[in-house]
Length: 374
Image (cartoon, rainbow, N blue to C red; front, side):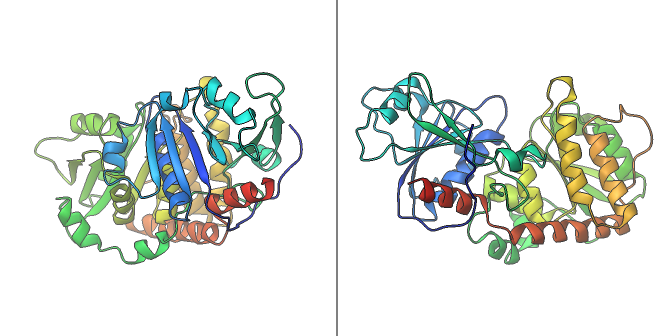
């Protein structure tokens, strides 16, 4: 790989974008790709989203988006397929060979710009790798160049997905009205905690930590491991903790759940980024990798997250990330979620969000790189 490209915001003429997404075993990949496609469309671009499983979009994005066309993966695997101006493969999911061959045929005045959108990380290698080029040396696609685009947390990375108008929408949010519309009953003194997790999250320890101070708490859980485990853990009738199992929410409504909650437990990539934009206390569970490789990823993020904050606040935030990801092997007590601690972590989360909002966003950086390469 060679030649580093400078990231930065930019405005470009309308182009045709082809975004490729494979749904592996969770929903973060299609969530990220949909948000990217929507963000591009809202900046005047035309987008075709090719995916091998569009079913989650029925609840993620029930209204669709003008300018975004969702197509089956096989629609691109056709010798007659005409690639757009920009081809984005999400997370290394190579487009079909016939499509790559069409990209290299020279039917267009210029070859498409080929982008590999990588996973988000706070690790040091992201700055080194962002914008590097990988020339294609064999068929299909000999002679093409694939550019690596790394989301990240510094101006030398690709930034984070942040669609236009997000901060304004958050500022207009009617918490009480939205909760009522979702039939989530939260009293004036109640603490609302949202939980979206993988199997293996230490939910029993979370219940113990929330019950420790006796404050009435509503646990709103996403379908899957969170809902099934909490249903087993909480007594019937409930004590100070009350369980509200949620259906799958549209992406915009999931954002509102994060804005409404006093504390958010999130997982993977899409909900992790959205929790950061919410500016509320959160704990992130990384996707588990072999040999605990994800431990390095979590540590790099938390090191950056807690930097400069009050020591007790930083220590509690770090301790919960370690426990929630299973790095402490279930040993030792966990910090309680007292009102004072939530207030301190809320201030820290808002500072983190505000700092990120001052940086160029991922879509703007992507548009700038594409414009430079064209």
